[in-house]
Amino acid sequence: MGECVISQNVIANLRSGLPIVYPTSTLPGLGGIPNKETLAKVYELKNRKDTMPVSLGVANLNQVKDLVIIPEIARILDYFPKGSLTLILKARQTLDNRLGGDMVAIRVFSNPIAIELSNECGPIVATSANISGQEPVEDCREAARLLGLENHRWIEGICPGGKGSTILKFENEKYPEKKVTIIREGVVLSSDVMEWMTSQA
Image 1 (tube, helix red, strand yellow):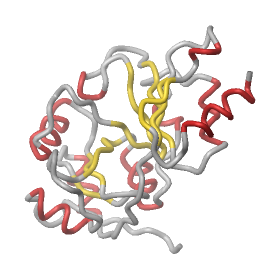
Image 2 (cartoon, rainbow, N blue to C red; image 1 turned 90 degrees about the horizontal axis):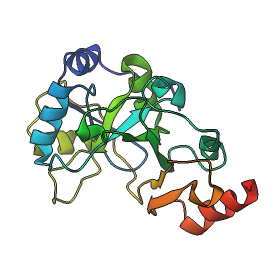
Image 3 (cartoon, helix red, strand yellow; image 1 turned 135 degrees about the vertical axis):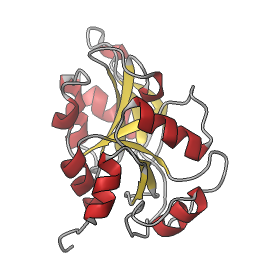
Image 4 (tube, rainbow, N blue to C red; image 1 turned 60 degrees about the vertical axis):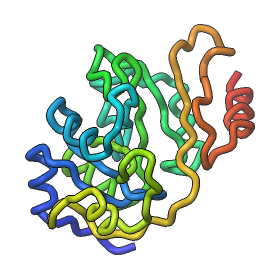
């Protein structure tokens, strides 16, 4: 693929605290700087309950090393296709409950535009760009329109759809049998995760 070009107007809007729509490896994402004000805007746009945390999307785990504890077992990301896993990791200090509080979901992007966006702006909110309960669309422009976002609040892209990432929760590495909890099976099968975990014992 060629070099991705993201409008500086979109970057400016994102940095100013306005949520934007961007492409991912599955469906359009609704993203923003993960602060209190922007999270409120994201939740209002989606009509999402505050009790349902959102993920953080990153270009690499180094971007969140000051926010979460990255266990050695996180090397599982190197074994499965990029973007296919979301890891719920222990926060270094309690964050906004809409980010999970003490346990934060981190997804390493595989889409080159999402990666560039995160490289430009740091960790960004990663949640589907649709009103809660409504079927998501695959066109970023259409997703933005349905959310009522004006120009320079989306990045062009048609997403391929398909299953979301498999969500794994890591809390305690002292007891091998409790290293991972599979919260949601997605593109990576639970059996494949457990086979990998067994190989590390």
